[in-house]
Image (tube, rainbow, N blue to C red; front, side, top):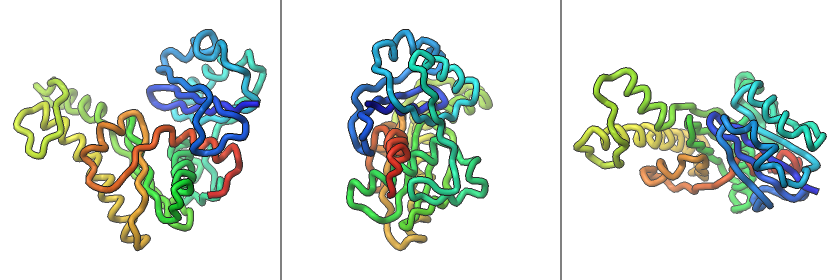
Length: 255
């Protein structure tokens, strides 16, 4: 028996197949990723030889039209996938959002996955969950498992496109992160990196002040490696944090 976890983001769909009894931190049996424009080929390509899972649980932030396209690729398995909708409480985490169901599913699942990862490390304090992709999110979890809220800001690509669209003459190659940039390429890259790391570090200070101890900082997402070198607080890069959250939800695991 197996379990299929699906993470539909703004740019790509990522999937991972696990043994039915898998828990957070478990390595997948198989995994893959496709850009959203290619999801209509999943049944004929990535999933053609995939053993039919018994259960499917997914995160989707790309909208109903994309979700329906993905479900069409599962019709040969004759099963109905479940999609996570944030709730007031799940997997032992209490949702402090003003309107819990309006919280992005990926943020909710990642926070649950981060708490599960904290448990694997024997850490019972606050956790700061950072996802770096098309957008960047920075979410705070208290020591007593209350989701406190968090930030959403543009990722590197969106920042650069905004500057290119609104400022003449800034269509330049990507540069390097420098302490004191002396060319436009480095100035743009450094500005984006410092904007993101500054937001993370400020949330770190706020959560430390509230909880009286430093949080565990877990960073995930396809562009995390770009941000990590400029981040001046202790942190860990964790691949597949949303998958850990989906595993925790599937297992009904209590953080």
